[in-house]
Length: 445
Image 1 (cartoon, rainbow, N blue to C red):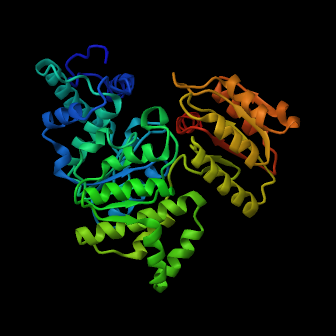
Image 2: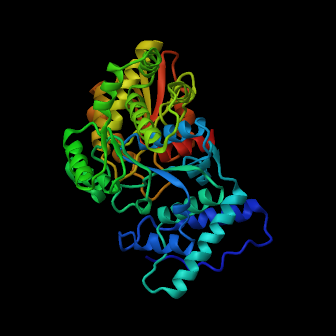
Image 3: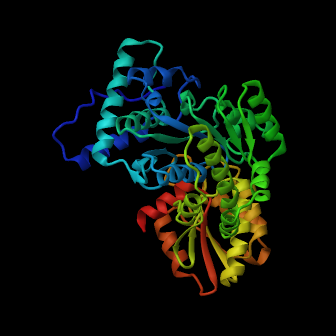
């Protein structure tokens, strides 16, 4: 992998803000993938840093959709149970610091710079002494920073969300206390495979011998892959659908309150909450943590996750749905919201990455919602899809009389102002298609 040569990374006499910007620019310029999609590089880098990932207990979470929400819920449950808890998630929406947080607080710019310095020094040392080492990819680098930061800060537990897949993901060098696999669907097929079975095989790669695996894939074929892997590795396997039914059969009064609380969640978050509930019960039993349903209820009541059905105004929602399953879940939630709150129509603001199956997403949204207007823009990224191409697809799938209600612009900020300004009183504006788009919008609000 070609990267520009980076000089010794020493903290120089520059303002923190200037140095921080330089380092973030450098990190974000690192390619997403290395030539060899293996874990040797990650192991070498972490070993050079003293294997900090071995100094904290961890929970490892994979999945196509919902893994970020499940990770955040698990971190909240551990924090409310009295543990200093790290959370490693992706992508970030506005600032890269969002990827590394402890007890809900993002890493400071000063700590970010110090951890980055140490990781960069380790990278430079390995590049100079080990011919088998190559500069880590972007996600590897951030993972190394996270592992070091959480260990240095003395976390009791860290919840690590995978970046892509599982088997070859940088996070898969972990030796976790618990593994979790959320829903599985068709996404990142150019990397993970073209079928549910193939993708499930990649996700199941996080399962470790003797370590419990909690899963809620929503796909029978994926469940079979996970079950076979768990049995082969002598790992306790817990299917959330089966476990949740058992919990309800043995429901206490508190559990009844819990069921009512779950019913109030957005449709797609109900399954994520069931997964987190089941996983935390399994972890509590394994780690002898006191399990308190009231803690779970409090965690869910206060749960907020930017970019996931996020209200930024009474009539404006941001959601990063970027594949078919996420689009279907969003449609169900929006129908429920419209019925509950009296919205007559929905206007869409849309931008998408070129590597997504956006044709299917656009078809689902166009046919599944009563759409008033569509505003199409482009991401500020080399992965952006051309607005004109996307507009043609909306015009193809929307009713013919709506074809003139699709407008586009490469200037996202200008188009957003237009979309907000043209909203009628009975219409809900929903931005959808990409978490990166959500981040850009939040950046100029």
